[in-house]
Amino acid sequence: MSKDTNASANPAAKLWGGRFSEATDAFVERFTASVSFDQRMAMEDIQGSLAHAEMLSEVGVLTAEEYEQIAGGLQDIAGEIEAGQFPWEVALEDVHMNIEARLTQRIGATGKKLHTGRSRNDQVATDIRLWLRGRIDLIGAELTRLQTGLVDLAEREADTIMPGFTHLQSAQPVTFGHHLLAWNEMLTRDYERLMDCRKRVNRSPLGAAALAGTSYPIDRARTAELLGFDAPTENSLDSVSDRDFAIEFCAFAALLLTHLSRASEELVLWTSSQFDFIDLPDRFCTGSSIMPQKKNPDVPELVRGKTGRVNGHLVSLLTLMKSQPLAYNKDNQEDKEPLFDAADTALDCLRAFADMVPALEAKKENMLAAAAQGFSTATDLADYLVRKGVAFRDAHEIVGQSVSFAIEQGADLAELSLQQLQQFSADIGEDVFEVLTLEGSVAARDHIGGTAPAQVRAACARAKKLIAAR
Image 1 (tube, helix red, strand yellow):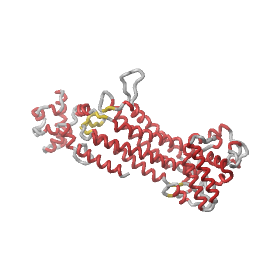
Image 2 (cartoon, helix red, strand yellow):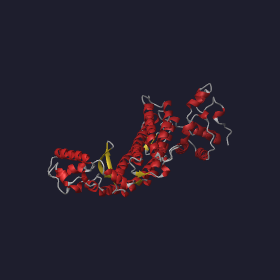
Image 3 (tube, helix red, strand yellow):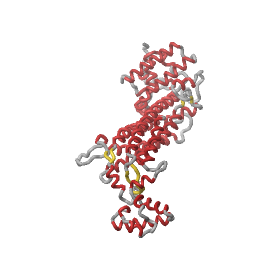
Image 4 (spheres, helix red, strand yellow):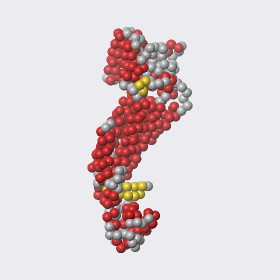
């Protein structure tokens, strides 16, 4: 082992410090360092370095022996990191310099050759893409797990009638399964956005160097292949300086959390005593410190709250990139914490939902009773009159008068007598009561996208097929 010491032993002798005549101020050193948060990309940094070293050996920049030394040293460092024994140094600024300095400490001067043909600029851009690609794959798997549980629940509740709302007012009856499939449609679009984002993440900036490429005979296609990227990026300036792929991911995350927040809001409402539509298992709730009767839906409330956090990360990254000149700027050190937290938050929220949703229990009697209130079959009566030849606007007026009369009587439309209904239109016959039932109302919406139980089951089958094809 070489006696080459860690660069932090001499503050003025940083790995990049040949130009400087004095040590970095201690506060500035802490202020500019990123190792406290970018060390989570350590495995990606080692992965990129291994690919870079292998390519350098293949093009003759490194000898086979040098490559073996570097690869062995990097693998040993990976073991140290996994074991929690790596000596992270703030004085070395970031994850890249820490690992390179440790490599040189372990294998000697050969370790200094690893950085040939690259810069921290393309190195960090590569690490971020590798890290984000892995997170995208984890998030995609959790989205799939959530949707699988959601569609299974929708299929079980295909016949369960509940009120459908507009303006949070009872509008028309729907089935609980149909409502759950609306959530699934949002998540399907989110999954499509995530996979589309992955395509643009999966380009290799390695070899772009500081900004202009390198004069060494590197093979960028080879490193892209070794790292599982689809292809190298096309322009060295753009490769090191843009973070639009991270912004795009945060835009996905913001939309995902927005959708989860909508579902969360409905879960919060439905578990309240005022609605009492569902039961949320105790493991997803907490109690009150003072009111012993309380069962608070903390998980959906917290997911709803975390939406603002992720939205803030999107705005942060958009603002970070605004007006930056080409190429790399130190501003971009600020890209990681918002990106990391957005990915972590999205993943955690999905895990919570994927565990929670299949465990929901519908209180079917309460849902049915609520659907019977608020004249939710009024539109069905209007449609009935139209089929009898009444113009829709006239039918609308007749039904409005019927509802007003029912309110005075303290009854629902279905509870009025035929004689009472016929005072508003002679076209109303005995068969009207078939359309005024909740079951008849939902069954009548028997088309693709409709709430009829048969259509809900068919939609579940299509959704399962789509999920299975991923």
